[in-house]
Image (cartoon, rainbow, N blue to C red; front, side, top):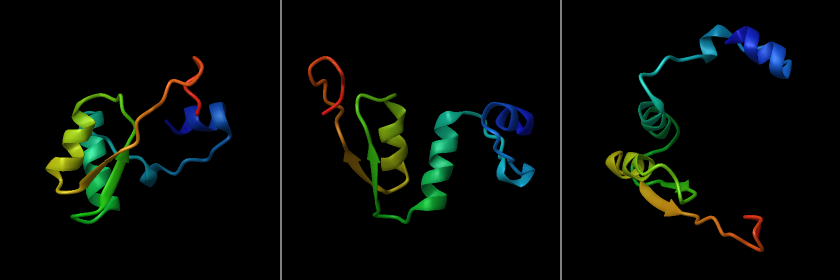
Length: 77
């Protein structure tokens, strides 16, 4: 991982910054618990992989949906 970040982005990632997780949903739940408090709002942009909303709610945070908008075929609004 360190070599990839360095070779791809010239970013010197430290080993203690990296954490192994069994999957992306587990990683999102861990980040939600580490970076927010119970009752905080967490923004997701829908449409998104459906377990992401459940990850917010199961950790007792408030789901804030920021829907993506297709604007003139670009997705930019």
